[in-house]
Image (tube, rainbow, N blue to C red; front, side, top):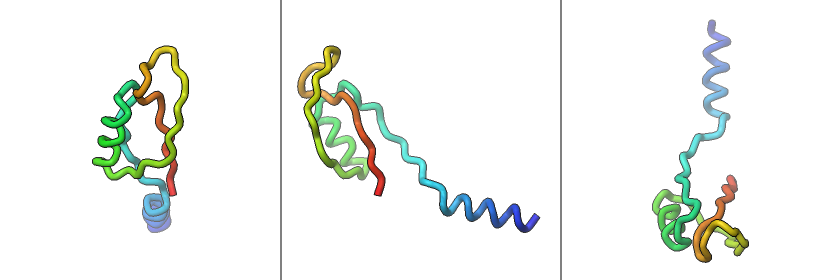
Amino acid sequence: MLLVGILLVATNIFSPKKIDIPDLKNTPLEEGIQQLKALGFEIGEQREVNDDEIEEGFLVQLRIVTR
């Protein structure tokens, strides 16, 4: 029983933290950036991509990078 308790604590300490990320697809770029900053995210590289379904200047996708 003691071994199981130690494994659970160690697993909890070393497992990645779950972070909820809002669905910002098709959100105006500046609005999406502000929402992410308000949640404590740092904004990194931005790229322009073509998408037939999403208007220019709106978010198409997010790529989350952990450190």
